[in-house]
View 1 (cartoon, one colour):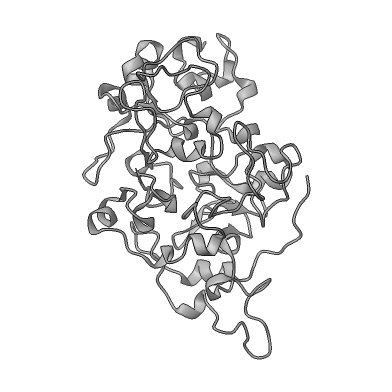
View 2: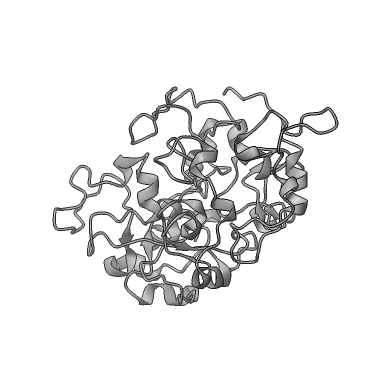
Length: 362
């Protein structure tokens, strides 16, 4: 593992204190311009931007603003509604509000297998080379970044973090979206977590409190009934780099959309309500969350017991099992896959894989 020698910018403390955001329109930064920008990167004979200057006249970069440099305890997941996706001292604890829905890059600092190797946090993963060859995908032109052509956020047709996210933090979502947290994918300000074109309903605290009544609601489709793909789903976004895990590969999906068996890869964008069987006893879990195809600005988050009652409300996605940024487990998984033991789960009973594969549990 090769680490990038860098320091977390002092900008973090300033931004975490002063860049205030509205309760649901999390993306629209408010506060003094000087808290985030510097006109000439000079004040009293000293540079304003550590490691800069940075694009958009910023005094720090993406990681500098979205890093908790102290610890991962308590409300370490966010400060004044700035989500922390990286922790530099102490593993974040989601039960204590220290880790958000996407996980943390904390673990990739010591283990490539536990997070995405994003430029500015860790060096390239030696297992996949540089240029990066994502598992189940095609090579990227350079190391993974937060946004842009080699990243996940922003406009993926535009190169560079700053250019790909230009204007995003100052744009206001539609009034209906701002009130409900619904993102319809129409432009950057109306896309789920600045994932351009992706739909979803955003938790106002990024799931720091693990509250099912305010949780993220991910958008998915039932490809066995609807279509081969919908680029607005969270799984389709993952498939832009990991295409073999989402596309119609090895005959897993017939031309007409029906699900074939046996599967050679775990399905994504398939509805467990329609499949039934052992999956019918799934109870909504924030450890293994499912998506819905029925979301809108008027969507009301159903209770856990209501998830399996409506077709399209229990759709398996990539992030049903993985965390986007990183986790304490190999392959960015939400749980320890090695502890899953069929019909003898022991302490792991009712967790992980067994949330869905209920007949394989103890």
